[in-house]
Length: 169
Image 1 (cartoon, helix red, strand yellow):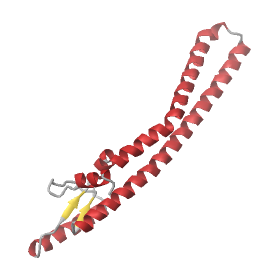
Image 2 (image 1 turned 60 degrees about the vertical axis):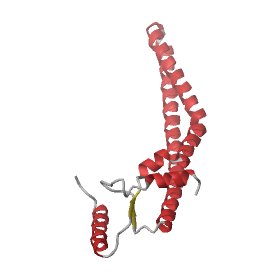
Image 3 (image 1 turned 180 degrees about the vertical axis):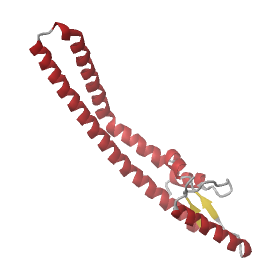
Image 4 (image 1 turned 90 degrees about the vertical axis):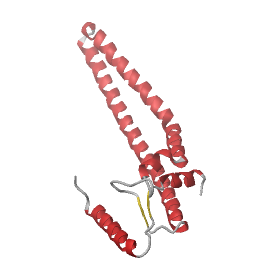
């Protein structure tokens, strides 16, 4: 398993601090599971619900359009052998145009959704970072990590962060 240089340096620094702290005074370290915060915190859930409501109409329209394209394709397959060559060609061109239009709208929807998700996620992450900083300062932590390989329950402050975010602090 590869470890990035920055993660290695953070781990080495934490170990160094721990070694120094053991001889001087107890080092106070905390760990926050960012993934869990983004999954369980009320602001993250609210952002997800907001996005679902915002894009529900467009997704419904896309599903309806997909159904119409599928129905047109099935109709062409069924009636194709009995149609005149010119009529079959015209319907195939129309169907191809409908499919291109559907794919374009689907890509636009996906791009818009991704952009909005990133915006909402950034706001939640910013809020979480403020809460983490507040906990860091109020409870006098020496170090709070967000990305670790292993962390014991004694240093895990994720629930504290989630509770603070849910309380609107």
